[in-house]
Image (cartoon, rainbow over all chains, first blue to last red):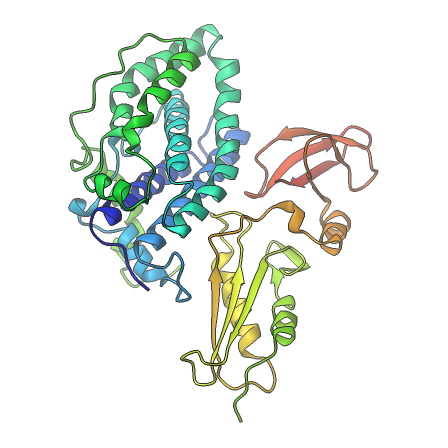
Length: 253
Length: 161
């Protein structure tokens, strides 16, 4: 069992962290979404993202194509690491929102970028990553259909449309940070782990954002944070995720 | 006496494991079993047995329960002594509803009122055979959508591709 190292590790870890935090964010809508179907939808979508995160963390730890399964505790130790310096998440996945319009717009922005991200690793030199990409795309199709179905109905409605556009204006400057290069991405490209740097797909994402929201909002500015800086929302988010572990470090579930 | 089990014996042992979501349906009928690898020269005392499974969905919460059950079933095969048993969740191939056997589909329809969506087009109601319409693509669990039968008005859960 060979754990990933260097830039390739950083590259896969950043993807895992994003999936993990988005999954967590979605699960926080369970029970408080505007209607029952949305409770179910966000829980199902969150479950998928957490599944992708677990698969990616396992690849980081060297369990991708090994007979020796990755120990759950080892995986949890990485996934719930209390040290903020270990994290590579994009700030979009860290911010908390109690507004469902923001949650829906983030869901669309993230999943649209996620599709492009999986496409880049569909023929990865890491067979486990290519396998995860094939499985993920089959699941992501439902996520996009869910978000698009709601936006189709809500964007043309006067009040809802206004709230969604306001959410978009808030989120876009943060969302572009998804494309901030991860340290080590160059190494991952050289090793054939990914086909190209993620930001080469940014123009495609911008086209989709513009056509989906019929917006001319400026999109070229990168978030200043990059992938090495955690937003203010990160600490509280990690605390919520670690709540049980912090109460009882020996807890099992 | 140490001996490794045959592939057939391992398959039979895996077939005794039911899916926790569908008690009475074997994970073999659900199409989860992908490979059985017997390695006499593996580093285990009597060699290794590696069982390769494919998950229905990557976020399925039952994965570790299923892996534990398979491990226990294979380890308990009569006449074998301490082979090292590994249960692997494979990263490929991707599970699809086409992997379900006829037995699994029948039991799902009869015991659970669960239909299976294959390809496009209407999904027939497992109770009356009428057409169903999708009510919500997200149902009570990750792998099932909710339909309603246009003929008998029964709520039908649909295992989706």
